[in-house]
Image 1: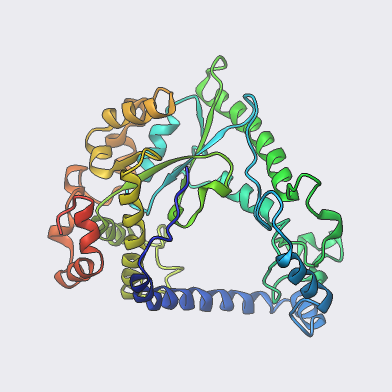
Image 2 (image 1 turned 120 degrees about the vertical axis):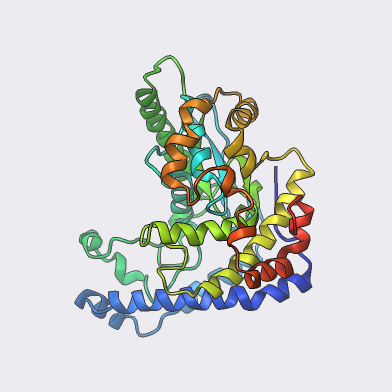
Length: 385
């Protein structure tokens, strides 16, 4: 199963670049502010002062050039070879691709109803263990790092851990003692296999205790996942992909309403530093990419696409469909969409009123921006445009 988002026409990609670049500038400004704040500590001033040049030494740059010119052997350079599960000691990750405000919390509650699916059960189900552990393992192979924040002076002593809690890739190149093994497997891949097998054991044990079903073993681990269209899934360990789809205009209206309902709890604007106009244009650009990707998925059997209206209006049918796909039993009644999750997490009065709410609540000028930006994609997926 492999999906890539590289099928977007060049003129469309060029058109959205200013929007994405502007968002990137805003996020980068915020990051610089955080760096400046962190650099005020005496320890940070000392370590930054010790590095007069924030670039790789000549030997490291030459090593990178040689490595880039070497023929590929086995897995791609600096990319983990996907480890393969063996036996029952490996939970298969289920990535619930979502955009936000599209029923992901209800879907996670539904998946949590099965004793065969492990997940972080704390509302709103956003503890992403697979994403964290996968990215953590890949630090061992990364040839790049933010050298204004991370360098050899940050690993002078184990005692620095208390003052420098964040960790980056090994800040030196070459890494002679961490090279690929004889079979071409990167060190990061071997480490992920070890840590995921141990995580699977612990998560399965915890899931048995939660469900009080010692006779049933967990088979899957589920988590919410964003921007899956940017991935080549062939570079990941074996995963199963589940995609949620809601009218992007309803998503936007729900975002605004949820921010008003719970100010400071849900921040969709990068810490409040991004204007609603910038966020709107950025979200439309992202929705365009995602909707085209979903349209391609609908032509394949690679992943089920669950529409928001089906999820909130006919949860038992969705439970049967997804349960059959995974080979597990899901309990729609236990998931309690209406009385438990919906009342706590929704921004509208009822599931019925949350469908097509953009027609009454969306500003006409904003609706026109959606029509101009993703009108054809909306029609492609059966939405009114």
